[in-house]
Length: 293
Image (cartoon, rainbow, N blue to C red; front, side, top):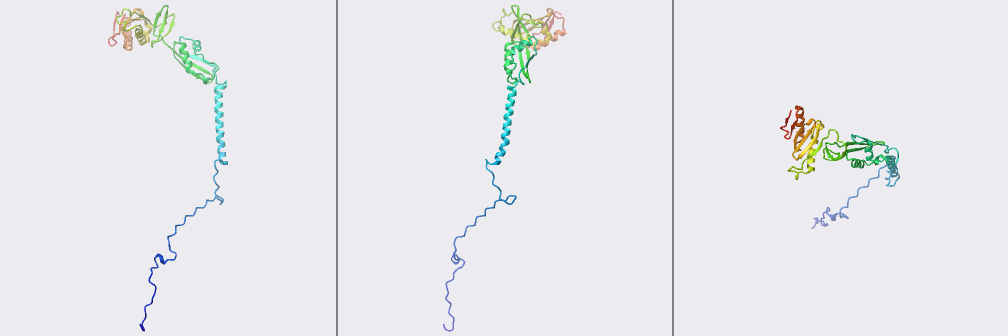
């Protein structure tokens, strides 16, 4: 068109913000890895030295005191063992015995057979105790102790007879447990003699001599000491017919061995209340009686 302007031809409109607008556009780049920290420096500005391995000089320095301690412990144990077993310092040189009433010290020491000269620590005290009790039935118990540095001590407890059984011209001693532990030619003072007359008892088949002996021992063992010293005989006719013969011609109807402790206390009270009485009955301890006063 004359005098007019014509529209300027140009390229089509394009969006520069799109991916085709950037030169070399593509996927985003990955982030850079962090930098490795630098090794710390020592006090003088140098890098720290590497730690020594297990076989380094430091380990050898630490091993020295440990080996020395072990060697000292071994020497100490060896020295102690030699002192206890090998040296002459801690050996048995003296053996003593105490607590005897009837037995002599020579009898006890002979039965003990303690190995004089042996290491004190090696002495078997249990074996000595068993040997003494086996060879001397009169001994009820024995306590064997080491008396350092050179001694062995024996403390014995003898059995006490509470009843005697006549056997020919001798007497068998019986303790409170019913143990017949010795035979002596003379009756000890203050110990009653058993007189067993149960042959005609209707209960003889049910209660044999051993059972009746047990009853007699039960009665004799329950007697208070002042009464036991006055008791001359324990007569047993049957299980429930036990009679005591006291000094001065006095007698006691005891009954059976049941409630023997209560009967002993009742008899003790009667003897104090009626010292001149000739007969006492404690077969029923809650209702004791006297007669012949």
